[in-house]
Length: 528
Ligand code: G4P
Image (cartoon, rainbow, N blue to C red; front, side, top):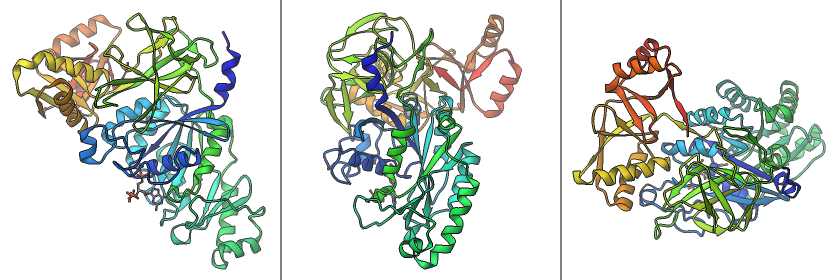
């Protein structure tokens, strides 16, 4: 079923996302990439929230009030004949579950580290998720124009804490006010940094070991120290090997300063040279390869309120194989219905553009009238479901209350829809009628309360509840499950998709239960 026409479209695509701790420079890098990709003309357009043309991500009041960005953009730009899809992730860590799922839709990640801070907490967690999919990682150490940690120390941290072997491709020449640029260790050339030049043009010197060149451009004081360091680096770090990179065993490392657009072109070069083309994905029946003729894709994100006037809900589909053509008929596998996709869009920070054709690796947004949920598969008829789109056990829990108890039915409906979107998780305890919400970050509760009010006209509030951990429960042993059910009713609930979940008040309780019921699996993640 191979489709040769598609092959050239596939080989010219790369789909990636940025993994970073807040403030490491994700937005600044995105902006500079869009400038290099000629989508943006000047700096400040993404960051100037509420003013510039591309600063329309404040769809929700809560985003405006708090100056945070919850929603996601899908950006497509061209760099040297390669089409790059950059899937933006929510900036705030409270919405990291969204980020986790976005990572299932990419083929490569850019790991960004603040050179002054090294590996930070959130990065570790996100790396753990990208590991689940063995996604290859390119690393960028940012903010070299500021005083930084020792570069070898940063790479040691990455190796130790993220379990990734670092292969530096460029190496910084000093940092902070004496930052001079980077050596390209492979090409054996120097890229000089000059913060006064808006879009850094590269200066190349063929022999970076020539002391006269170093003296002239780097200064006498740094020359011997730098040339010694360079010899050491070339000696201790092995050469880059693409096969190992694609297996997520090593990461190529680049250094630079996103603010001054220095080093961003090196990342883009590596993306087009090394990052994989759109890859295959697993389903419950077989592997789907991108070059297959027929369209397949899966929903990894649902976004409400892309347009506040219409309260519309958009489902984002990552195309796995075939071609999307405007107006085509697709099979919504879970509900066993064929639907005509009269319009699909891509979004750039609030502006939507209608798509005529799209290919594997691309992301299209389609209208969701309440029938699509995260993890759903779309095909041209084949009854397959993509796997590997996880739900993560929530980390904080709240009980939700209605201000008007007569609206219980509407509340349940609203919460079901919000949980299908992945905005929140909802649990229905066995022993009482309480409704329990689970989230990764506290802001998710505020967003849900606000959305219930605006979209469902429901006034609700929430309060703390004595639950600390949740684990999905299953077992092949029917008898064990039935005993477990009988003995633990007061801690058991169903989620919105009728999966059994154990809600535990403490680590000690969870440990005891897990050691008592050894035939039962207690899972931190669940397939959609
Ligand atoms: P994020 O999306 O990962 O959260 O980070 P973002 O790009 O918003 O950057 C966080 C802050 O770090 C911003 O400063 C940004 O200008 C700064 N920054 C990013 N890259 C560099 C760099 O290479 N060098 C230096 N010196 N700073 C960098 P801010 O003061 O928080 O915001 P703004 O007022 O500059 O917009």
